[in-house]
Length: 76
Length: 208
Image (cartoon, rainbow over all chains, first blue to last red; front, side, top):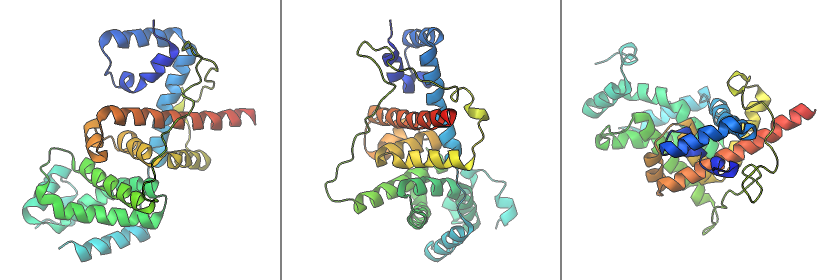
């Protein structure tokens, strides 16, 4: 029987389908039966997806121009 | 000779081939245009400073221009430039540190368990379930950026390269001169820290 802690420890591989089939099934079953773990799983995934959205940047036009000038000057 | 308009229709692979064969400036400029925002994002989060981030972006694309004859195309051009950028960022950060300073390992509550492996304190809040619908307002965005910038540098680099840039574990391990298990461990710790920070944020909002 997998403990809650053990499930959390395996999240990286679990979320990418990298666990052996029996282990993956054990975690699937656990998440179905354990609401706190399911909440944690959702939050763990959400932390990544929200961060991904937040981290998008557009290089400011002034810096983009400096970049262009630099490359024009140095890329020979 | 390609016009600017025509260049936009080509894939990265086609532009890289054109650049490698003929040093086509239009092709290079288009590749820079396509990838500069994400390279800037990576550099900015690593250095936490716009001017230093710009230096890294400049060095990255200059390096790409010079090294392109060696670029075999086994990886995506985007992954390749992100690896170059990560290397420049980490070098810069290391130079800025006191010599021999060792990075603190990222410890922290990974959900609060009892010794028997069961929950001591339940993770609360439904924010995890509705994450894709959540509006990313300025406050939440600032909070997320601050949380990422608080991560120790290698954890930050791993998180950015994997969860933001989508590089493979092998690529990240090679870039950071470490092993895949070490990368996965750092990624996990980084995600746990971010989750913890967000949980605090959303708990406070509910309580307010």
